[in-house]
Length: 220
Picture 1 (tube, rainbow, N blue to C red):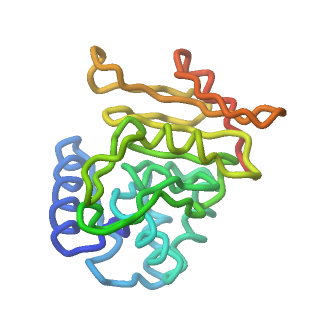
Picture 2 (tube, rainbow, N blue to C red; picture 1 turned 120 degrees about the horizontal axis):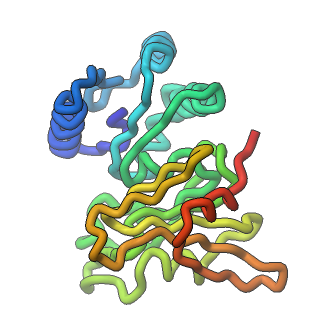
């Protein structure tokens, strides 16, 4: 699903790469919608029903959520995942299942003032999550002094006790058998669990054993 691609250039580049990736694996990939197209509920139901796996491309999180809500895709996808449909994604797309998404909302962060925000995800996991957690996002004045994980830890949202921070070059599977996959085993990249304690302190712990990921509670 290329819903997060807010520009035609982003759409064309990302969709092409994803189609090539799945084709090279011997899989048949279908695109839910063209750029600026709002898929009908019938099309959404048909394609979600036929898919063995639903993949959501990364991009601008607020734009993605706005487009999904407009078409009803958010509700349909949440129901499909609850029903056992496998969902995967990159960046914004990977964070969809969480209750809250920690994100850079700007489409042009080098040239406009912005700050991190929290957006409502599909609410299937009772936690907040951020991607590119070791990155320092660009601003008009240059890179931010804090990483996304550092900002999330210092601005942890009220009402939640758990969080997940995923560095660049790292993939996570959250299922009965959770896994952490690091693209370059020699890098310092990893996945971090954030937890709010009864005294209000928020700690960040690197995941060394994938079973630690089972701490993140699922919602029914």
